[in-house]
Length: 352
Figure: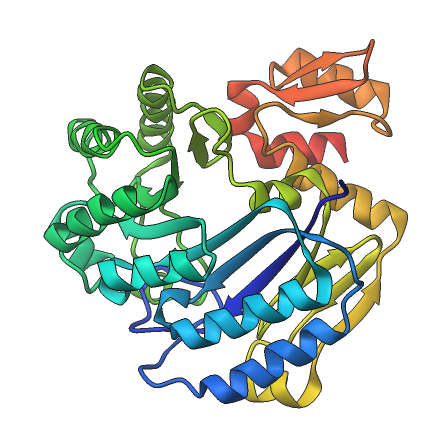
């Protein structure tokens, strides 16, 4: 079956983290009727194809009510139909979900939960602007793993002054939960964030590199290997919705700030809720070259790589000589080496 996913953006959080540049704003009492009207309008404009995945992201979508989640999923199923074994993911924060709400979401249809933990000690949680404690995070991880067979957590590493010993201890603690999926992100300082304005600096390049190599080593030994630059999974538990992005498949985005790709059609929604409600979705037709470059940018994030069809042989040869790329001319398949993953931006520029 042809893959087709729907991303649903929830634009609110309980608080804005200082490193975050996502389209989200603090809000404790969202107008869910207004949001539902906008979501339903966005869904009306989409091609009628069976949906293979739905992903609720944000923001903190675990803040939404069970009623709103149910209405959205009901409309998606009625309008498009669910493919067999559909993956329905929802992002949650430890402070914005309870065990009871996890159970309710699962009963409605969510079958994959992703918990934004970010750190497992209170000092770093405070530094990262998280409002949950390490104790709450550990409790929610245990509850999530009891309720959902398919689940994941996010952590941020390469924090300022973080040592190898500290990260090994934290990662070992994470791996002890035997989760089927984890996302591990290096701290980056994005322009315009609070961290950027304060002049916060992450770990230096050499430290970050060593932390990354240690991460790959430890996750491999634990049977949860790297499959994308920042994502690790037991076999069969790779996030199928995110694979749509990385493999260049079609997906639609509904809600404020949501993006979509439908063939050569790129869709984009205004970031602010009121503008999104008034203006709706804008569409742009990409050239074949633009879409090819997008697919290259995303596909090389995958450890298994992608088709090399369309890449000039001289560029492939140069990347192979550099030690950044593996290339099989028989099936025209390329994959980044471990060094290539760590030099990904330079590799992509070399191949474009």
